[in-house]
Image 1 (cartoon, rainbow, N blue to C red):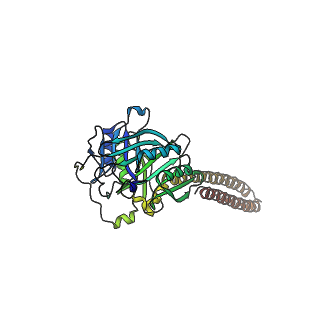
Image 2 (image 1 turned 90 degrees about the horizontal axis):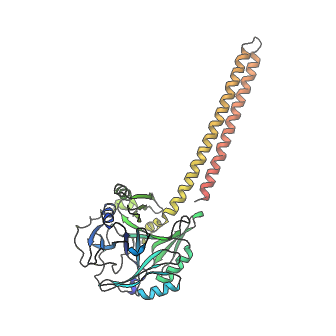
Image 3 (image 1 turned 90 degrees about the vertical axis):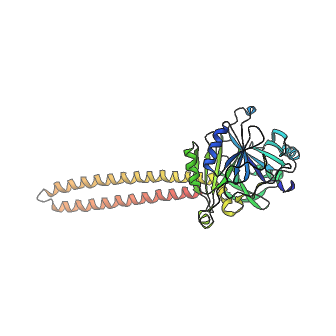
Amino acid sequence: MSNAEVLGRFVWHELLTNDTAGAAAFYPKVVPWRTAPSSMPGYTIWMAGQTQIGGLMALPAEGGSTPPHWLIYVGTPNVDGTCSQAQGLGARIVKPPGDIPNVGRFAVLSDPQGATFAVFTPGGGPPPGAAPAQGGFSWHELATTDVTAALRFYGQLFGWNKGAAHDMGAMGVYQVFQHAGQQVGGMCNVQGPSTAPSWLSYVHVADSGRAVAAAKSAGGRLLHGPMEVPGGSWIAMMMDPQGGTFAVQEAPRAAAQKAAPAPKPAAAAKPSAPAKPATAAAKPAASTPAASSAGVTAAKAVAGARVAKRAKKAGRKMARAARKTARKTARRVRRAGRKVARRAARPAGRRAARKTARKTARAVRRGGRRLARRARVVGRRVRRAARRRR
């Protein structure tokens, strides 16, 4: 693939962490990866089958209090030119352009809203391997403070264009973006003022539930999911033991049952040539409609959880009101019964007893009607709240 064709493609994914040994042990238990050495001291390659898909390295000492995180690399035919253009659009240079011997040239930037990403121009290294059946990166999601401005910035820089938009109500719009006619990711609002803008990458796995169970047993933490999203895909968001956030995506299960089982990754064999970013990534699995809807991820899921929580609270309120009304009705019945008994004990009390019994029956019916009305009112409130937040 030529340098011109690499523009705007997600070509590499790099984990920077404070415990490389711990991360190297954790991820192969969760996703279908293995590690391989590289020619660069302290740098490890992530392998999915025979394909190099990313790297692992320690957080730089000059990073200060920067937490562990995944860094995406986007291809460009000219790193220096892209950096100049990005600065003109309001971005900041985090690491100036530099060469990786026999691999290529790269730089790290921060977009105008503060999300960090890298750009990369491939050198004369070996071509990328075939797309892995499992373990590739299938979707890329940007949480930002200004979706419209972010889409404009990346569109001018990499040629990404606007795709479908999903209205998330109070949480804003989830904006899908495209590259070369394929849906490759989405942009949404950050959730809360304390959350910094950032990129989140999804790894394609065979079973999201199994990945979550493996992550938990290996010391990771589940942030959200697994849950089915429109289109049938299943997604889950997790945090590794060191604090790096990542997500997994499982293909629609009906389709997965028809497909042949994916081959297991090959045994640990050294890559043909040590490299950092590969020249280009395979087409993301998210280019299909089912995978693209996986990008409506945590935003939609969180909105649904809030609606469910409010509905549950309203249901408890309705139940309390019902119990209170039932207790009142029962007390009235007991009091009326005692009155009936006292009057029936008198010689001339039979007629009064019948009158009191009729009055008691009417009171019971009125109480039941009141209870039914209250239940209907609360039910309508719950349904309206759910509709407003969809």
